[in-house]
Length: 579
Image 1: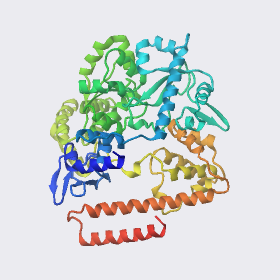
Image 2: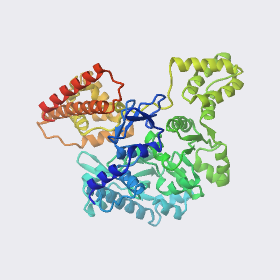
Image 3: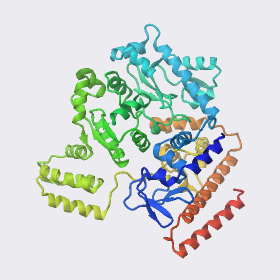
Image 4: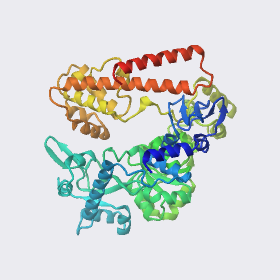
């Protein structure tokens, strides 16, 4: 059966109300069903499901789509994965439906070949990477299990090997396996232990590299690519997923070595968040396997601050999160080596729930014997309580009263007053204007700006619609700042890189590789601007269509008339632009 036929079969067999109703409490409201949106925190239902049209839309955060796109978003699946999940549940045969993207297959194969190259390099006699891992107490069996490898200190070992297999430099650049400086190409990973990052489908999607000896950065990760997005993956999940389901909990740690060390000790429901702050997407990925999470980050200040941020993300995604602190040692890897598996399991039983951890972390900042500091502490802790659900907040008010010597009634009054003045949500809804991914038009615009700072002068009608958040926005702001300071001509890339974080610098490197034909820069600029204008019109046209199709009588006649008038004008403009 063809892919289009499979999709049609899924949509005809899968009732969107039934699928969404498993995870969202829906109530009939006119011709629609309504409920609290699963994609952002809200108290008043703004999530609508229309059974007749088999679509959903949230007027709070803008999420919308059909049954397949809901499964993609909620369960963190790609399109194929969502179709496979629904087809499996409804007994639909998908044989031959997805041949797979040949381009993606090629990228996965290149990563696999690179992983094999690193794997073999680690196992050569007297290898520095092998000796380093043995010194860290990692057995050969565990190294094999995780596919750990080694990148030597030469500049083109991997490049030469991959070219001998017929792999182009462009593909290696795309995957971040090599870097380029002018006309010179060289291996990105050098003199490092290599940790292949493998998805739950068993495909190598990227790499992490730990430097041997001194040097910076200590850890280096693959850049984002078509097959690798850090925010959507967890290191070790390919090995841990069955154990996570069996134990009905996951242990989240910071580093590759923490995962490997715990796994070797027999604690196998453990993953790491790829060296980045925990994301909403990763929390949703975890939710596919369990709702119980133990955060075991490093004991230093940075690790505990990361735990503070992470527990808010998990709480916002309705996961039951607890925080474990490994006292007296640097990290879980060191703890397990010094004290063993049993001690770590005992420590997990003492992990602090969400509220207790927040109270402890905030109270550590203040001297509660000092009257003014005690009041300052109360202000901050009450703000933290307001991010909790009311029942949970009420449980902690008595603990805070006992801790501070201030009556629970007074604390409760302050808490209620603050909630009325300014409601606080545990996790703000993700919005389009907070996206981090760049469109092709935006990448081309940044490339033009790098070539000539005059292109930072974006037309006012689209100015607020481009570079809205993320790494691209930071690069744009720095380029614009340079132009406003009077600089002209090409951007000073050396100065620019000094102000960027490593991931932003990697994005800049990829943008530099975009080719723009000489003397056609202005034409490319105008094409990018026109493309963004069309996208904005199409986006607004779709928004109005959704609002009109899901209206259950709440829109007034004037509002309906204004929306239809606006849509007519938009469609006229798009027709004039040739859509």
